[in-house]
Length: 466
Image 1 (spheres, helix red, strand yellow):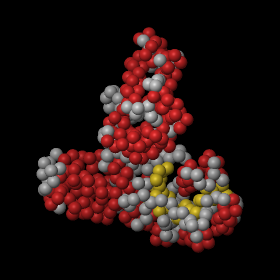
Image 2 (image 1 turned 135 degrees about the vertical axis):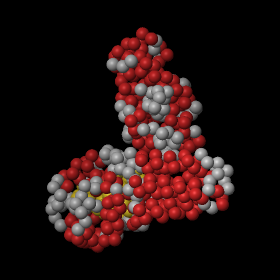
Image 3 (image 1 turned 135 degrees about the horizontal axis):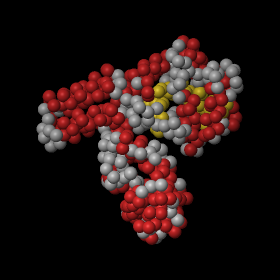
Image 4 (image 1 turned 90 degrees about the vertical axis):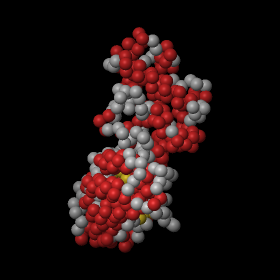
């Protein structure tokens, strides 16, 4: 996961600060030296890392911090604020045209993920009630048009194409088509190259000058590290971009691009790709990303994922059951399905404060829910509805039926009782009405939230107890 190494290095640096009852200027400078090295190892631009640590040091050696009862915490607070400022302070949204359609020009090098992320953005807007359209302006790469048609079909968004016609002509005709057919967003999937060249840039400039896009988004691969920042700088100087889509932030990347792009180009990161699925796209929130980097979790993004995965019909049924204290293993099965729809378990856990930075990837078993579910499927319907009747002989039969041990069945039943107890604290309310209460509870008591979601257990380092 991105920033994993950086988070670990920063945590070690801050441990030393927290251990001191009183800080000296030398303590702060030593900590910032380690922070600067951690940033450089994460592939952050040298000038950005230098300026960042200088800003933190200037603020941290002030009298208010040095004389504070908790100077270590004050320094961490400053680091959090400076990280947020470095990445843009506030969320940057897509531009909206005064007269539809809003034209979004997607550009970037070949292989950066333009086509896929055009579809991801279109899907995101479709879910918000818009009528987007994808346009095949890459007439050079073999099968580029077919790829766009395939992803367009998957997300249920129309694709406009004119074969190998001039890309400028295709873009112009697509905009006319969108106006006639009521499409309020047009995504131009432009051609890329293996490297920046004048031919590519001239074509992009021609498209820009003829269709006047409301938004020019540069798609860059976070895995390329410092090269991604150099690409962003070149595109911005030559074409003039409005924002960045950072892809593969879920991969084994050091994350330096996310911390450098804004400072080097002055342009915000607007979206980040967090997985291979077409649903794996998030708006970029600088404050939330800063919290993740510092191991503080990201409760709001966690809740947003949960709300998007919520099946409202099943939530209404669950509400009635909770009101009557009739939550059973069938309901637990539904909860596992909804949690799985939130995406990777590893990425979900990383969002939880107080736990995400303490669990290693090797401790997380992505197949844990599959095993939980196989145990429940091995039960009779009566056992699922009335778990209290499951005695030792039934446990042995259930374990044999799913190829597991009796201890695994016991752990599942213990998890069920714990989750039932936690959910009863919501007073039988679920679905949209519980969201505000859930937000407050998770912010005030993240440990309770972790238990309720089934993400912590008693089994040592593995959060699922297996």
